[in-house]
Amino acid sequence: MRKSVLQSRLPPLPSQFSSQALHNRPSGSTEGKRRRRDYTPSSWDAYFETKRLVEINGGDKFCVYSSGNDGPVVLLLHGGGYSALSWAVMTKVLTVQCQCQVVAFDSRGHGSTVTSNTDDLSIDSQSRDVSSIMKSLYKESSPPPPVVVVGHSMGGAVAAHTVFLNRIPSVVGLVLIDVVEGSAMNALSSMQSFLRSRPQSFESIENAIEWSVRSGQTKNRDSARVSMPGQIRKVPTNNRVIEGNQEMGSANERIDEEDAAASQMTVADVRENSQYKYEWRIDLSKTEQHWKGWFEGLSQKFLGCTVAKLLLLAGVDRLDKDLTVGQMQGKFEMHVLPQVGHVVHEDSPGKVADVLTRFLVRNKFSQAKEDYAHSLPAC
Image 1 (cartoon, helix red, strand yellow):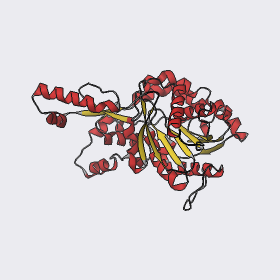
Image 2: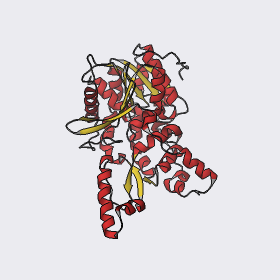
Image 3: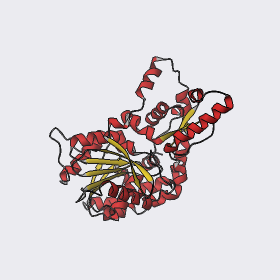
């Protein structure tokens, strides 16, 4: 049992932390009030400096967050089901420690990004998105700034694919976070079961954040408060599901007007009395056709990239044969952080920022800021 959990790194889901159980807790107690305060959502602008929509592919609009204006570009690619906000807390620490420009965006089908084809999550399509976004952001830079690509889980596979195919010519470094071909492929067979075990909806954003922390999906409450809102969307409970965050406003206006006319109430009254719930922004169970393509051949791509490489893991059991041999031959740097789950950069953002800072400085991509006091790596 323990071996399978280590291989999959899927967060546990105790029954007492289900969406319904959390919703039914007494709300009048001091403990309940304290919990509601503790799990209130945080805004993106507490961690990133800018947020904008970057249009590529003739109309697709990708939500891009950034911080910093000098040094190398640290491009952050999130995992499946998450959003760019999963990097928020780590970004704030990293930009304090070293000179760099951080860029993180919501992949297609995720977060606040809106594309014409949200179902095409193939690794090649996502890789082309990365290339197009970077070209759009730095088309006026000559020469383009050096880029270090950092990817977690699915984003790690996209990062390795993009760098291996040289789709960002100015890349100087590649960092993968808790993604290894062997263990990822083994975990795919249990992924549908895990997805079914999660609550399918939440009564509030606070409820979703609390579930995220108490279920073990995210061990860091500060990170969950900013990242969880990017993983869910608000929908009415009257079964009229609204697709996409950008369409929510106009669609809700039509619903409110229709309901007001039918009930002889004002639109304001309808909105005041409307019932909503929060569902997952993307239905990962429907992306299964792409899972194998994300991770197949990942180890060889990673080892074949001719740039400085770092592998950051949540446990040494993750290494497969190819990476074990490559690590012994000194082909990449590796760190293992203890007491963290699969979303390493959310669970321990300070330590991950420290490892990235040391990687950037040691390879002379960046300079540490004067007040940075580094700690020793985990291993």
